[in-house]
Length: 181
Image 1 (cartoon, rainbow, N blue to C red):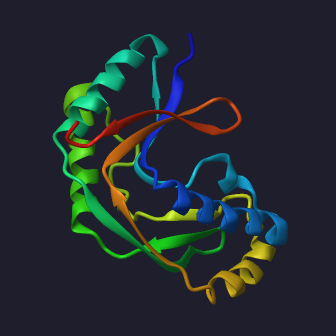
Image 2: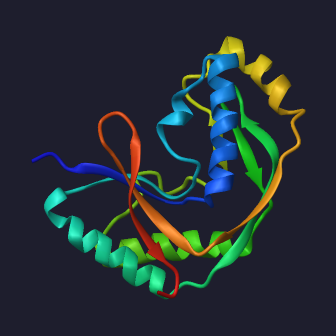
């Protein structure tokens, strides 16, 4: 049996998710970039990885154990940035608790699940993607001209992590683990 593909993320509150989805829909309607709509608004903590379906209960239990040891914090979204020439995203104000959470999770997954990134030297740069890999280079400057002028600031509480699974078409949230539960 082929393993499923998962990733672990922070999913904001429903109001923030709706606002971010509206930005993604604008990117699709105006700049022909809809790839970011294949996942809910999120901040990646652990990038996509393969995991055997028969071992899913252990994965869920491991995430729950990790989350129980965590404390909540707030994150602030602050306007838009880009990874030219393909990605436009909502930026975050630097957050030591977020970087600690991501680092602790990475180490916990390595210790408990023997899960090691296939890109170990990649620097963690948390963000919320609006326009993605399907944003054509010819549309990037037009999209960036728009989003670079949009002011967007939002703060939300982080008190859980989510496991998302790819169903062959989109990413679905399948499990949430509350902090300190």
